[in-house]
Image (tube, rainbow over the protein chains, first blue to last red):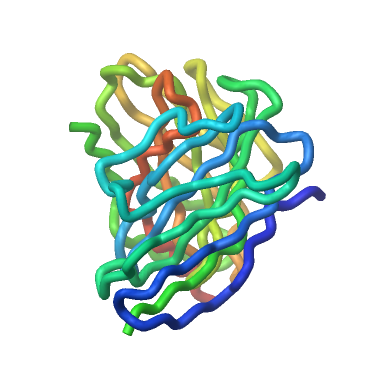
Length: 116
Length: 110
């Protein structure tokens, strides 16, 4: 079964450093997402991306965050100047090729980020 | 807001049936997803409902009432491996922008 893959699975970074989390969505999908889950809390939407631009973003997704599709297969989340409260599991997800009902949203295994 | 409410925890014995209820705000509603999440792992898709009624997939079924803002996930013939958190998530016209509940931890006992 096709799957969304993410790297790294774990990353420890010092406060103030920049982090890039990488994702390879399912190959025929056109809609990409990042979510995060702080330990013990709900899964939260960060951003959706389609046709090489952000479709929607949450209030969490401020100027500290950016996303990019640098080539035909990768989708990245960059977190600049990391803070302690950025420590969370970050999930990449994808759906498509169409939008709307009938298109399951599949999640990757997650990248666990610890900011120290 | 878009509060999504589901019970915190449910316990059931192996072989039994468990029903996890979820209520949500109806304004802007488009569809309702159910995911399974084992601790430290990704949410795994179980089902989604857009129209009223019951969707059956093997041991798992999901029901939706759009007018009541209500859904449930039914797990039959429980197995030990079904011990996990079950997440209810609604979506709106922004299909991929899922709004998750806090999850229901299901504990299956021998």
